[in-house]
Image 1 (cartoon, rainbow, N blue to C red):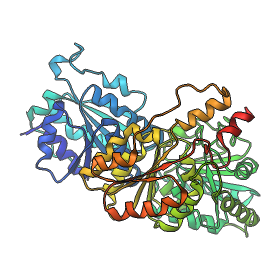
Image 2 (image 1 turned 60 degrees about the vertical axis):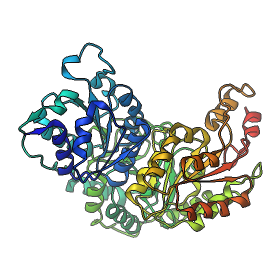
Image 3 (image 1 turned 180 degrees about the horizontal axis):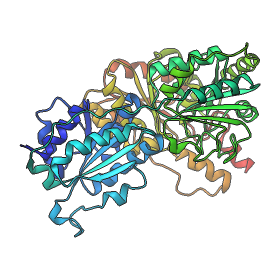
Image 4 (image 1 turned 180 degrees about the vertical axis):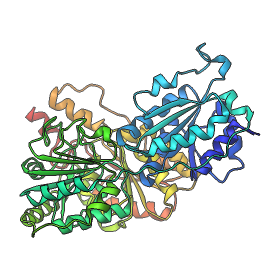
Length: 549
């Protein structure tokens, strides 16, 4: 006989869970009690949104479900931000929510929410467990749902009395991973398309990649001389200094790269959905009928033909597809090798940061310094805002597993993601980029980094505004500024107040020594860069945007 709380923990252990992220609540005390005797590491966070984003980062970097526990009502609704990220980003995550006791349901009891209705549109599966003896069944299924096809978040509601009841239940077994492989006929068709192509282009995206699959994709690109781009915030899928890398197919795309994608006669899209951002609002590939011959490879059959009608649809995971296609060879020397070299040259030019701009701090030299100083396995995490352009355009990702950024464009992601990344890889450098507005959405998780001695470095780009919104505001309604100014704390002092290390950068030359002191401190650190709000993009000032409007 075991309690429901003990059965939950047993099922997590059976499925290989080594850590969870949580904000404690009285609604799932029985689970917390069971964790006391478990080998699972429990990381307590400061807000449920941050906890869910940490679980997302864990799932993003490992391919295995990140686990998050929150309490009912406001705990669950706070966590919904992380669930939305995981859904749009195809990241495996399981959120456990303490629920009101069974006798109180349907009475609008204290903090009661109908989670099937609340999460129904932003999760792959939502379930409430009423019978503790079925916990092994439901948890095992949750792992299978979260990881199969197009990965995503699962939400499990746990009535309080169910967790405390003692029952007999079968021993939990690990879920069986589900893989989808390409058929020989589809590989033959793809080989024929490529052999007849004149201007092919490859776009990598989505999840269900691993280090071995990335290496195989690199070998395929070499064998076929293929130009390769990475979808929005999936840049870690291809070495940026490889001769076949053409750039990121995302927001603010290199115009030369956009032209190349539009002019391609065959586009091989592997793993990604090619949503609004990577498709430049469905203009690089026209929806629903692209001008290019589209070969779409995706692990979920439901995504094939959902937005674009592909010429060839291949229902396979990226890892399984590249393993199979790596055995295929071109019939003749590819005629487009010269264009592939030109594409890489254009990327190198595009990704070289400018060293001029308004104000006393220039982000270009700062990015150049970081590129020279940071190891290739450093992990970059960021949320959303104009500041992120400096990372996406000018940081040259070299290895798989080095990027944690939400394709959903959610602010507040960088700091909690960095905490999770550092907990997962304590021996690696972890950098969080955040704007001033972005940081203060989940900056309280800096306290979590301090509590668990996780020396992340948070670079806060502080320009005193919600920069992206101000840019759009000045373009659409020039001179009519409303609701985009911010009055911020002294971020370096805030870091010290939390027990970390703090630095303030007011001139470009200040950054390198400040960063080195932060790294040498051995503490979680905030390096605040006070950036002139005129420096709104790498190439345009706010005044230029306003004047052009």
